[in-house]
Structure formats: C-alpha cells, structure tokens
Image (cartoon, rainbow, N blue to C red; front, side, top):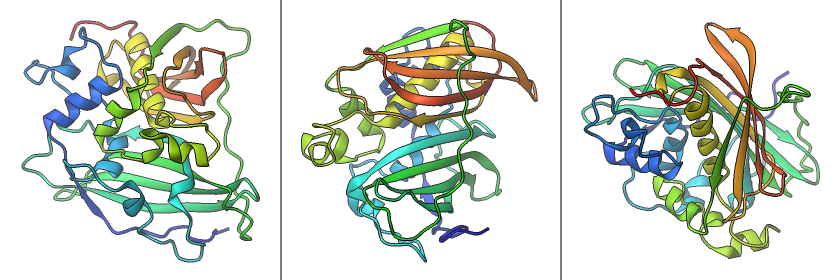
Length: 308
C-alpha cells in the first residue's frame, strides 16, 4: 500500500568533488598514515574512501560553507506536513557501492537523484522520512552508489500518517566474542573537522540547538560515527582496500558527545552473498552504550590492512 509522499522525486542536483575533498574526508573519519592510498593524492593507488558518496547530498558542488537549515527545508513533499528541519536527527543509513567514484569529478558531470520511499507517523515521538539517493553519471546514466536514509523529525508526529513497516534487525552473533575491535577517541573538535566535508548542521558546531533538543549541547555527527565505523571495519577485516566494501548500514542509536570514545565491535558471520561476507558490528561509547546499532556490511575479508 502506498504511503503519503511515496515515490515523490526531488529535482536532480549536480554534485562534484576534488581530490582535496577526498583527502579531507578520509582524514576526518580517521584514516591513518599507513593508509596513504586514502591520504596522499600521488599514491599510485589513490582512491576515494568508499563511503564518500554519503556526504554528497550535503556538499553538492559547494566549496564554501552553506546554510544547512535553508537548504534542508527547501523542498516540500506532497501530501505530508512541512516539518521543521531544525529538529531532525539521523535515523539510519544503508549505502550500496555499485562502482567506485573517480578521485575527482573534474571533467565529468555527476548528479544526485533523490526520491521518497515513505513518510511514517510515529505519534508523539515524531515522524520518519525515508528516502533513496543515487549518485549518477549524467552523461552515461551509470549509477555509482545507492543510499537509503531515514531522518527522524523530533516531536513532529500525530498528523495521521501510517506508522510504517518494522525494520529488519541485524544483531551480533550471540555468545561470540568480536573478531575485531576498532577504537576511535573523539575530541571537542571532531565535529568541527568533519563538518568541513559539507555537513554544516549547527547542531554539531554550537551548543544552542542541542540544548533546545534535549541533548545538553552540541553532539557529534551521527554520520561521523557511521563513517568512522565503516573505516574501522574496512581497516580491521578488509585490508583497507576500498574494493572490498560492497554495502554497509547502521542505525543511529544514541548521540555522541564530543570527547566520547567510540568502540566498534565487529563480527564475521561466515554467510556469503555474491562472494561478499556478511559482517555485523555495534559501536558503543566508553560507558558501553550503543551509539550505532543494527550494523551490517558486505565485504571481502582479507584480514588487517595490507600494503596496496
């Protein structure tokens, strides 16, 4: 059964990036000096980190900072209320990599194509908007990546919409120790670096929005945690080789406070899909509270980082 707004297509938007953008992204999510193929543009195997497409809906073609609120709230969805983007947080993301992005878009034309999957009324807690975004070579029509995203609009429910389907749950294997653990120590400046990729939500830069939303102050981007976990999984089990990551998803379970330690526990399942193994992961803060749940990816497991 169709839900309000389902299938609505937003206008296509041009996206672009330079090698400098790829370098900044890799550094901002924690790539290390022994992964020079992500951090040095003259490395013979220089590559864009495979989850970079996730930032392009925020960045588009900009090299300058942008007004996050003005851009986010500018495109209404037919059949649903107009929501306040000053009170939205990430729900979850699933990225499927169909083809690696070139190191720069220079000389080519890429565009972002977005459509609504569904808009779900969760009552008093709020509303979920689920969308699909693809990065496409405009000249050839080739799709490079597909992202399914959900945004949770805090306290903006009870408008009479459908509750929506239940999400699949990808729990870690019971009673099994992680096959790998990846630790990231955030700092008070972690979000200020990550936002330079193009995600300029004031919630991550200054305390006032987070205080109004009940977080007590600024919080780190959920997508920083998501991308740094992706880096951890690829580094620990995929040899830091971008070709080994096919798909990754996680749910944003709780906010990260600047200065939190992020501990990603990673499990192999042994289950193969088209030659890629299903991996499960959970990211917790230093107090043991999950900040990313439902972590799952498909990758070729080669062990720790190998020299490319």
